Length: 296
Ligand code: UTP
Image (tube, rainbow, N blue to C red; front, side, top):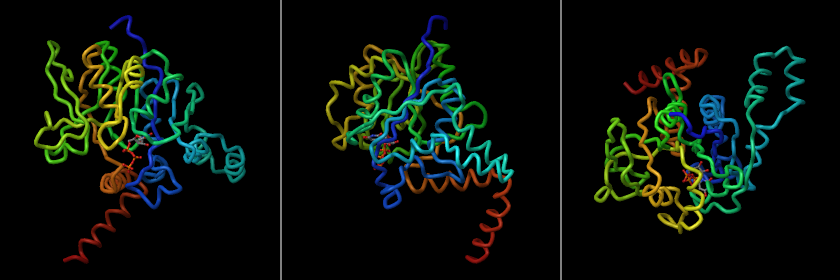
């Protein structure tokens, strides 16, 4: 669709407390926990860069210095690796963020909720449509990454979207839940969105995952949203208000999502990514087979 504003900025809210990973997250940000050898935040950054994002906006808290350090240049380590002839490792730490991509940090002083974290990015994002990625939802796509799929759909329709997937009906109280209506093009338009409804009152079992393309107008709505479920300022509540004036699509992505904010999802992701790694696969499979033998 011509005349559609490009999606140039992505917001990464990484200022949460990560309580489900205590005690590790007492000193390590949840988003810095590695799946095999890359921190969760890097997977999300790579997905955004693949989607054509030019500015990465990290919403951090005072305690998340490790994230700034991670994306900063470490000249001493680079020189050391080069002196040791470790070119592969050198390339891995030099190319974390491509040169043409800018990073910016904004502070969320208190973890008041995801909606509040996104609102903290308002001055940097301005009025343009933008993406939001939650790094603890890790999405492994066979081809095109999830955000790039959503950006393509946005370019085709001029309408933003939210990543969704079917979840077990008994688990609606852990997700934002949407109900949808099919439009004339066969796409699913979001009719209603509710934060963590009990299974008995949930409008569907389509759960929101941490990928959004939102209009810049969301910031003025976030301004007036009050604390909702869990006493937090919820992004879902602002989106619900906005739906009346700004339609959004529910994007069922091609790929597997791991809820790396939970221990189960984190371990599953670790196993699946390790099985894809040529060096680790064989060792891991023989370890599993030994475990299996010892049970029988
Ligand atoms: P979560 O609710 O999953 O993360 O927020 P959490 O609060 O850090 O973790 P738990 O539930 O205590 O274990 C989803 C994303 O939103 C960010 C988090 O960092 C995470 O990436 N977030 C959440 C903020 O940036 N600020 C907030 O106030 C809340």
